[in-house]
Amino acid sequence: MIPMPASRDKIPDKTPVMAYLPARPPCAVQGKLFPHRVGAGPSGYGRSLMRTVVWGTFLWLVTVACSAVTIAQGTGPAAIVNGQPIPEKDVQRALARIPAEHRARARQEILDRLIDNALLDQHLVQLKIVAQEEEVQKRYQQIQEEIKRSGHDFAKLLQELSLTEAELREQIAADLRWERYVASQIPEATLRKFFEQHPDWFNGAAVQARHLLIACPPSADAGKKQAARQKAEQLRQAILAEAEKRWLQSQPAQAEERETLRLRLLVEVFAEWAIKHSECPSKTRGGDLGFFPRLGVMVEPFAAAAFALPMGQVSAPIETPFGYHLILVTAKQPGRAVKFEDVQDEVRHHLAEQLREQLLQQLRAKARIEIPPPAN
View 1 (cartoon, rainbow, N blue to C red):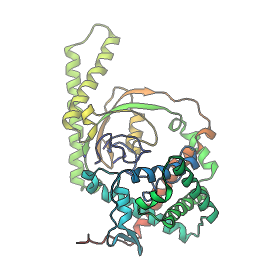
View 2 (cartoon, rainbow, N blue to C red; view 1 turned 120 degrees about the vertical axis):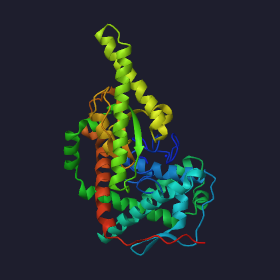
View 3 (cartoon, helix red, strand yellow; view 1 turned 45 degrees about the horizontal axis):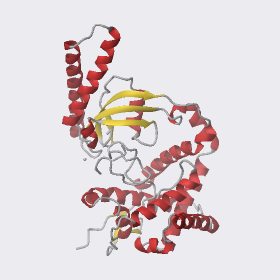
View 4 (cartoon, helix red, strand yellow; view 1 turned 90 degrees about the horizontal axis):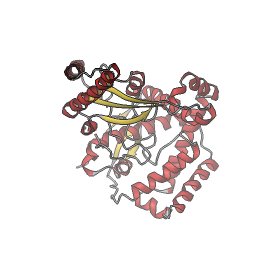
């Protein structure tokens, strides 16, 4: 609950959920705990597109296999999506790297992501978007090569994961279909226009911030949301009042020193209140999130608010899927000059995620999703 990311008290602070995600508390990391393809590694676009896809799948295979967790097979499907079963072993495979004490909470999110993956791929198959066999084979071989270079045995790795070659190939084919769909929906002109409108999203600019979270799930009713917002606002007023009180009690003579002291005292009070009242794992650090960029780490409402906030001001309550956040920006790091060609994959990745969420809203609205009761 950092801002509290995305992420999504959930998995404990500094516990990496996937090796390629930042080791941040779940409340701040962007989006869900898991990437697009929970089943066999991350998908789609990122820095150095092909390398990211191949390396991500390889890394997922190795780290899950090395977790020394037995993958339960299950006796029935974990869910049925428009008639298509999602095997229980797919859920167990994704849970393998989660500490045992957190798996119950992680299960639903994993299942949601697998359902989303199934809905997307069903849609792309209906659109007759095809992954050519030679493309699948090429990526399959690249994954094999990565695993061999790492000193692992490919066949043994699949066996430890209860993953057949055919299942891995289907995951690869699904990724390729999605990449092809994204390319058809987001031409280069769209990417370039978005980059020109938001250059600071991709130039390495970063802010350092603290936050205080009052947790409130998206499913909460209006009354609970209002109560959480009011509590956050009351804490905000209390923080500002206490910081002002301490400042008035110890004003230095010089104006410059007074402003420096004001910020120091505000940070001090904010950290104390975060330790006492925040519901994010970052509370142990007084809500300190360190530096983070505009994209890829924090959920969008939080990132947008943090980058718009002047230093030394406490934000009004900011709503995210995790609840309501108070944000205090303590430092800003300027970006550098970048060319579109240098960050094109990052721009595509961002717009592809937006496309994915929009498409899933439509698909879920008309989907038939069944969750069978747990087997006795």
